[in-house]
Length: 622
Image (tube, rainbow, N blue to C red):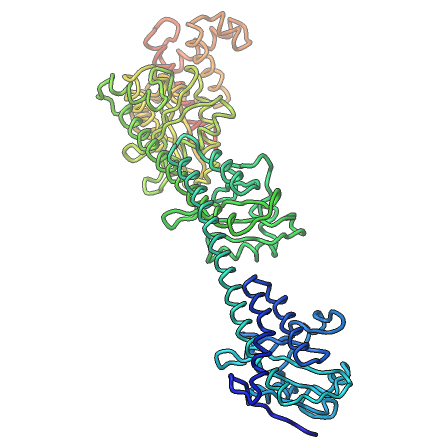
């Protein structure tokens, strides 16, 4: 094997005509640089000129990969286009001794018998039919940035000293041209990137201004924000609250959300959503198996360190990209500002409503000022209202909050009683609710609705509730609050305790016996009943029940034996006999003595109510 090593030409040649010839050939390369030819076109021109200078058939160029340090095939001058084949080759691998020698010496290397010399990759030499191979380093600023491999196929070639010098100087000139071309390409890429970034910033600024103006307008709300996001992103969007419920949509379509209940529990969707753990906005890939057929952008909506929900943009009308990601992030901030304003406004309104309840039930407030404040809150204090006081039987237990209970009762009454405004506040050691009612006879309906509301809140303690008679003006509310509070005391004193649930009693159910219960404890009430009913209490229960029913009906019908008989479905003589038996057992004549009749009526009501309180009867709501 014969080898010839050449020193790199830096302008000192024995034959100066080689340098002049190289410079003349390079003038076309320089013109290509000025015309800003693409790099591959410039490399093709280098190959072609090098082959023409040396009067040789083939040339291939390899450029250095900055990441790996290897040289990857780029272009070739051949009788047919073989660029795609050359681009599969890599020079500088461990088996490539030829390239290693060129890099170590930074000198051109000539191999006379390429198919038997161990330095080149001989399988490639045989494949391409190379007899002798000339490898030339392309040096710029002292670094080998490329390699030129020259051969004349199977034909012998002399490679004179002048040709070798010519090849080296032209390769170095070509290296300088490549550095300049790559520098210009990077500059153009940077300018293009800066232009794109400026355009992106301009569009983002416009989007931010649009979203900010919507939030500052205040009255537009989440729907307007959602519409603006859909327009800016060119795709439909949906705004979700913290529980994943849809609270606003934009874009005129119903976008698919990975946070919908039927999708978010899918393992693959869960893995995609996990990307949000340390990011504010992510692009999620489609998950067809979970019903998520398109890419989506998901942005977290948060404020003051609290997660309030998400924004989802679905890729439908145009591709999602960097601009849409940035728009989503800014939009999430606008949504957070809007939600924060709504929450603060809601909290302020709740505070004002709580204050109004306290002022109503305590009384003493200037009526004009009270009416003015109530009107601002949409409350007509002259409309019929009932006052409800609710407390735990065990004073140490904590009932639901007034706000939660008022909201639950309003939702329940909307279904059963129409849309009923409910105000709530903690007054003293109990919850006080003020509920608008349509008439004066809705105690039982309110009791049912209140029981359902408490059940929805999963109250663990036993709750007691008192419902007042109807208020028709500001002066009635303190009296109604006192009534309802009295009922709480009555229930604590006379009703049987249960583990949980609620016991409700209204002034309507109590009637006149409310005053009797309010003014007597258990022992005093027992004494009153014994004094009024006397021997009636000693009779068999089966005999006592019709007598008590008769005195109750007799007083309700205005002391008419005829109407009492008709109401009870018995003969009028039977009514007279029962009234006589009552007079005999109690010593009080319900027919001839009005005061005795009133006492008997109160005692009958108290006895009946006490029996109900001691049972799981009508006043208990589970």
